[in-house]
Image (tube, rainbow, N blue to C red; front, top):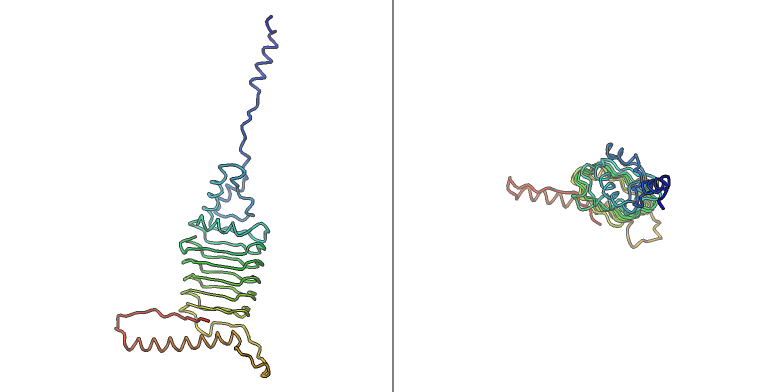
Length: 268
């Protein structure tokens, strides 16, 4: 027996109306395209596209970050060491400003080698309570803010264009190695735990270095070692005298065409 016409039409509609089982790409966040257009990312890192949610989103994430001139993620619990490392690895060519201020779970920041992030001019890591280690190598960096980082113990900074370094409130900083051809002032008055300090800063003079105040000890205490701040100042003055003597000898003995740059070098 033949199927009635209505039954055949019902079967045909059923085949046409069958839904596809292929997965569909989730909708894009409108802010992603705006971030590319503006060259700025200022939302939490988890708001970026994630390749684990859709395969092609990894490339979209890279596009957002590599086009960024500014990356500003502040006062967020979710920012951890992996994200700054990702940014440095991508090394966005036009990135000028990085701001991770107030990130309580950031323990280190490394921007190295010197070719990484070649346009980077400003880094703000202030108020990062867990930040312990900073290493930055850059030819373009001019401003570095490490203020109010109470856990910061070691900072290695090789930035020949650095003009401003803020270390206010870095009470536990014990090691600072700094190379800069442009720095003219340095305030270390908050750094009361310094044990190792090396400065390679030809424009930095003694009068522009502020050290922490040392409270005098009673004579009965008879300390075996002088306070660290006093040692640093004495060492600095001695290095300065030696450098002056060396320059005088060089001036008298060297040929007129000989030019050897001198550096302010203080080492403890």
